[in-house]
Image (cartoon, rainbow, N blue to C red; front, top):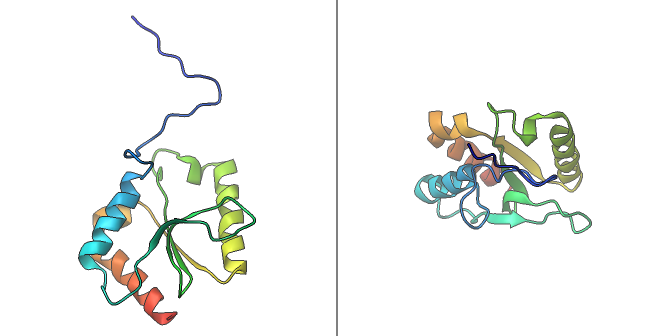
Length: 130
């Protein structure tokens, strides 16, 4: 039996596609292309919303200042739902609010159970801030 060891400090990549795009992010992008209103601004991927920090929004609608965050690991105890990761996300989202952003957070059940409602909610918030 062969034992595989990880290097200290390295974490498995998780469910990410080549190029660093998570499965949830890729699916949101696909759904937005199918169901989103083409008259609305197109979301920018991995937008750095605070020049003083390295934080990036998964998707950002620049004019209306709406961020969409896809939170993976809901059922597996992923980083967004554990102590340090949750605290870091709180700091990021609170800073975004200080800068005038609205942050919408979604996870796999939103994509799987009612993707049309999720896209509609994003469109409603974006339209309301134009």
